[in-house]
Amino acid sequence: MSDRRIPREGALRVRLLAGAALIACLPALPTMAQVAAASPVEAPAASPQPAPNTPGADGLTPGGLYVNADAAAREGDVVTASGTPDDRVFARTRDHSIRAEEVTYDLKSGVATASGQAEVVAPDGSVLHASRVELDAAFKAGVATDLALRLTNGASLMAATAVRRSENVSELNRVIFTPCPICDVDGPKQPTISIQADKAVQDENLRAILYRNAVFRVGGVPVFYLPAFAHPDPSVDRASGFLIPRVDWDEGRGGSVEIPYLLVVSPSEDWLFSPQINTKVAPLLNLQWRRRFANGTIVARGGYTYGRNFGDFDLDGDGDTESNVRFGDRTSRSYLLAHGKFDPDGPWRYGFTAERVSDKTLFDRYDVSSPYQDN
Image (cartoon, rainbow, N blue to C red; front, side, top):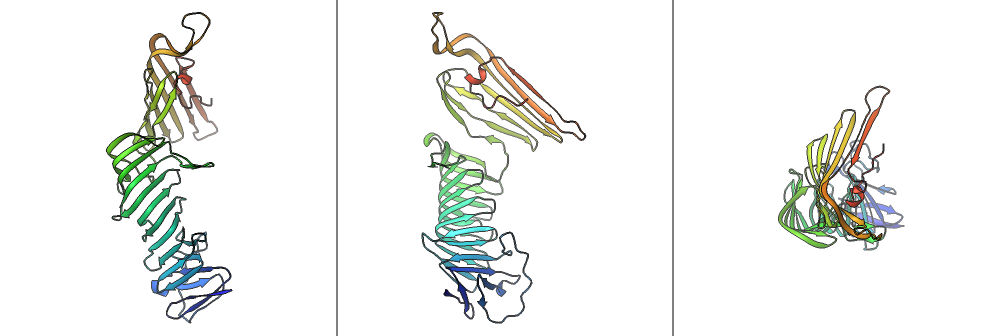
């Protein structure tokens, strides 16, 4: 066993079996902090402490701190712990977990600093990586360098530096944002779409991220530039705006890009406009309407184009099929898909489906997503 000394007005001797495990609990009065550990602690006599608050799922009371490190010390209200690149400090407080080569935490102000391969896991499962990060009393990054944030929905945000300018505004420099996962079972991969910008500002009042000099990349290749751009931040469940474009290549249609725009009418209703632009054939206009009622939902989608048919066809009647040719007259081609289900009070439930398509092969030719519904 080894001894660790934690100075605070008189040394507190902590006996540990492996490394240093420290729990610092902050009761109602910040100046009356008490220290406990995995094994008995010799502490000077003190006046009776207020009854601690009910511990959470991790066994810590609100304001409590758990640290596991090679070395830990306390001076006043500041707890400092250090480790190595291979054996980093592990700390947990206020439902957040921290791993880093060095961690400091102020029990009074609630400010934490982590440096050296810092990793912070929030209660919602989002993970922040940085070479150095300072967390304010709300446990949001006040200052961070080499920031990488992975959100629970799979999106990632990376920046060279991040500074919290005010209570509601954070500024990030040299930013890359992607809504696509950048890792799978095979390791890191190039995101399908990403936004690179000189600067980004996250405004929590607007619930939006605003970019300056934004470059949009598809598969890592820059495709277009905007001097200013904005989109809702990850805290927004739904908001009107453009969704992730869908880029495709087909021998019959040529290059295709589908740019969806979501129009949120109300918390229970929205419209999705999704035109498909093709280089070899006429565009296909797609539209979807969704509405939720008190006891059910209706979803209706449709598409329309005006053009010739295309695909494999025997044009000259010699019995040999030519590949990817356009044939027939220009005409209207469309589809309609709708379904609904309702569960009112009582023993009965009911629903419906409606399906119509002008061409039997239209779904395949235009690669319409998920056209077949369960009847």
